[in-house]
Length: 155
Image (cartoon, rainbow, N blue to C red; front, side, top):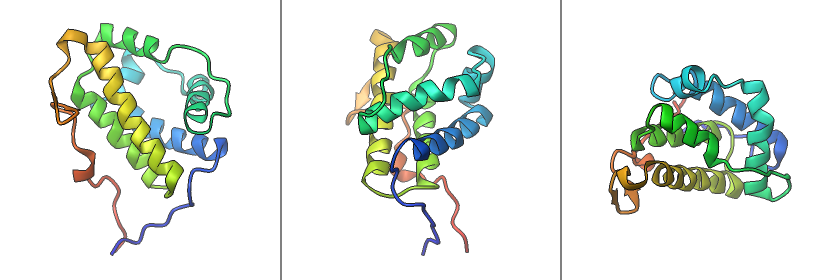
């Protein structure tokens, strides 16, 4: 039996900001994908969070005015060091864990599903003809998330 305590569903921008900070804190520290943020892109988290918050707020709630091409910065990273299906899979694992550690509900589920779809689409767009083949709609090396449990449960 899980002793999971959630804060309810993702209700708006304030909740998204907390999820994004949790996600990026984990992503920056992650040995697999952290270097994309810290070494290759040199991401300034405080500068990045408002823009990515606009992206997710628009995606989930259609309330933010996000303009731009979200693929462009990822294309630059990919040209510096190829992002693999496993890298995108790790991104999705951390994204789901950041949400699951705090929220449950339809918006939380939609955010997790959107994250996976976005990761797969980015992988296909960036890798192009070199994209790893899809099996059952999932790239080889893209870790099946339902099979993983990233959060710990209290005894």
